[in-house]
Amino acid sequence: MNSGTESGSKQAKPTREDVAAARRLKAIWEARKSELNLTQTNFGDVAGVGWSQGAVSQYLSGKIPLNYNALLTFARVLGFEPDEVRSDLPEQRLTAPQRPSADEINSRAPGALREPAMRKFVEGAEGETDIEGMVRRYEWDILSLRTVLSAVLVSLARSTPGAAAEIHDALKQIPQHTHGYLADALQTIREAQRVTAEEQLSALRREAS
Image (cartoon, rainbow, N blue to C red; front, side):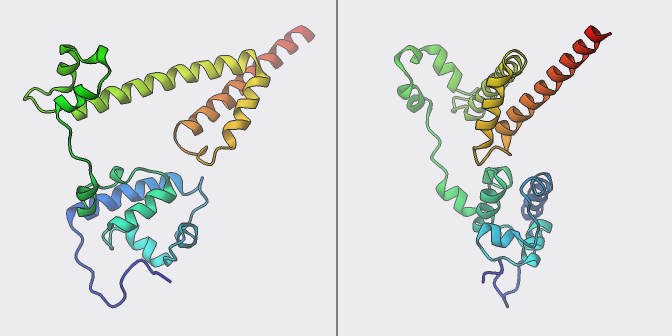
């Protein structure tokens, strides 16, 4: 059984990065442990790593620095991207893809996008590839699509309850339905159904009176 630490070895004093990573990990743990039915005692079995409750507790408190394998284990079970908690580990630097140049990005774009405007989009103020800016734009697009889809789900739940119920049941069959937008979509449908039911009940009461 793997306790999560090397028995008998002296643990290095956690660095500032270790403490910050543990704080972020603990926040994710507290936010998701209930919906995933996780405890410090059962985590080792759920993850298939055999960690003791003490090892899990020390990772969450930062007493044991969060190494790469431990980070991947927590990320897999809790459902987050490893770099949400930390991105400074040597293994991450080795596996990170090389930053592409603006010319490389431009050459991969469809012909209609190989224009000065596209180059301006991928070029930073100092001529470096503005990956961060591109990510922000993608995040904004995703947020916009989520907003539109939520509106569609609300409209469907109010106008065609049967279809909305089928979508709700189908989404619940997806293993990751308790995370991210799938969870939000399910909540959106349920809330719209609740409001619609209340409105229908109010209408019936008015007719009866």
